[in-house]
Length: 235
Image (cartoon, rainbow, N blue to C red; front, side, top):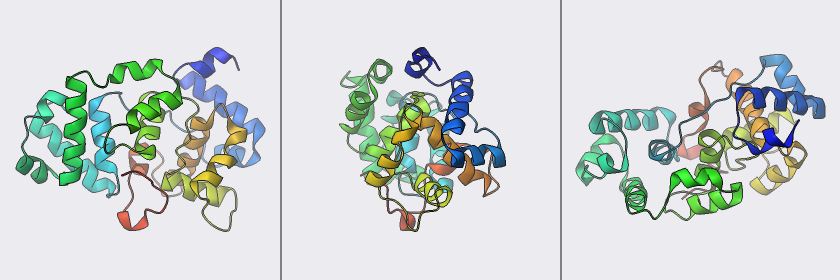
């Protein structure tokens, strides 16, 4: 595979070629494709709305995060920094924001409006630098920044080692006695460079397919009940 594909955001063509390469490298990943087929690309649009949705998804159930985001869309028309900042505390609490998450998203909106952060510029930065910039914002930790880089920016080599669904799937596929901690999981992923985002999609694909939710997309993976969180490190 050419280095040009490695340096560009993921596309269906990139995904297909990278899956072929990983299947040749790893028989366990090949078995996922044999069982369930190739994973979808799964992408979210870059920008404020996606980051807001990711913050809502932290340590709550999928259903409650999705319902809150839909209420936010209804209240704002379009989820943008300007429209979000028009909502007061009582309105945000009614939508489903905790006080902490309301503060986080307000801070993000204000940072964008005053030019403190330029989300468009993230596309020009290396993964580590883009992640560091995101994690400099209150309420955005490793899981949120990794998911944003992987799903919204289409980065090909992101490995969200604090994602519980990924941890669970790797444990099962690799026949591990216990769930690997993030540092061990990151070390395990080294052989899949520079396509760790594709390996992530393969593990997610297996996780979803075994639950009968193959076509549901990564939203199903972005949140788990807080009682199950043992590997997510976000604030």
